[in-house]
Image (cartoon, rainbow over all chains, first blue to last red; front, top):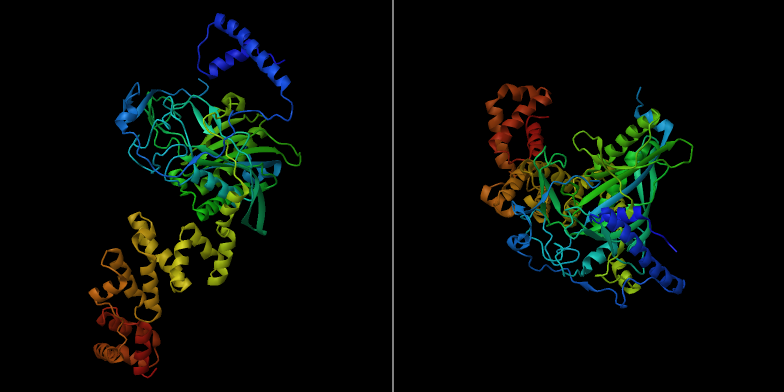
Length: 99
Length: 498
């Protein structure tokens, strides 16, 4: 059974931009361990001839024709933005991905 | 002491890898119906889907899938019988959804190849570039970094986002590693991107304008000691946006890495940014690991399962391969290799071909489009074909061949057509441009010229043929440039007993 370490949970929290206290990390490491355990049990049942499922309904090739439909007005598009300037979404300075 | 290029290549063997992103030229975006026009006012081409608003559901653009399959077929790929989209999760404001819809382990096309030819001192050499995959994804929004210095991220106070480009269909074409190019690595990389651009243009699936970013190249490069058979640590140089830059980025990285290795330093696996002005690269963020993207199958999009019938229908529409077409036209037109290359580089091969189809002589068609018309187009910073139609140019060339126009008059007709004075025939009649081929009128002008310059005429009579130039000039002037100079020369010399 796969195990998840406290460090891995901390890394996931960092990637997902969720701030967690030490207590929360301790708690979640335990909970995620239980979830992974449940997934592992399902994996034991699934044999090699069962493909992994991403979509529960067997529907393929749902497409649309390449046609333009009217977009939102810039005012509407920007209406939910916390800040905007020059008809653009304004975001805090980007410090680079590594933070 | 630092190594020069030849020394670097002697000690180290480069291995290339190229990732090319192509913006498709569909009318609407990949997963929604927003328009894809380049240069539109900011945030005028967005909707709940491409803004990532809650509850919005994407639907794939059929033409984008077909374009991707066509690209795969043209690159000799297998088309996957089952293909899926995946979410590539990352937090960066260029994607408002906080993920990019891409493909991960189930791309639409796999295992192709493209042969590219380069000129070397040892003759032309062909290199086979193996294609790993062609996958579908979406472009990101455009950031404008405000404050700090010149739009750079560092020192910026805030960033402004325009999501018009977010969601435009993007196809990524990834090569396998390209070994054994040796000193030719820079030329091979350039030739590959050029060949790919020609193929994409032939397929009419993209504008392939590198300067507008509809074709972008990332260059992966690593070095290993020559003969070691090892694979070194690679760097990835992003956004190399011209053919020349592809070549410069490769040779620059070979030099940089060789000199680091030479001084005992290690190559860091990192993303580097290409600096267009200096041709150098500078380090960017360190490469995140694939697992950091936490790819998972996109639950909102169903799998793409192209059946054979669909694929075969698309295969039937494949155009002649650019390399084959070029060879065919070159032999049909009997033009030198260099001139073919000039036409291709000027993006005028199609135009010249259409002009020839309308009966124009290939040599003249080439020289008019690449000469006079391109010169005017460059002056005005427009595309040659926007100035004048193929039909007009073909008519003008045919009139030259029939002796109705001289080159000089033809230039005036071209000017007139460009100035909006109508068809070539309209311009000729309005401006009264007609070759003076009437021998009587010409003889009168010749006699006048001789009478005005009797000494010159005497020298010509005495056998000084070059002196006739002054008389021919006078005749051309008198006829307003509308006479055929060769005809004038013939009549004049005959008249003076030569």
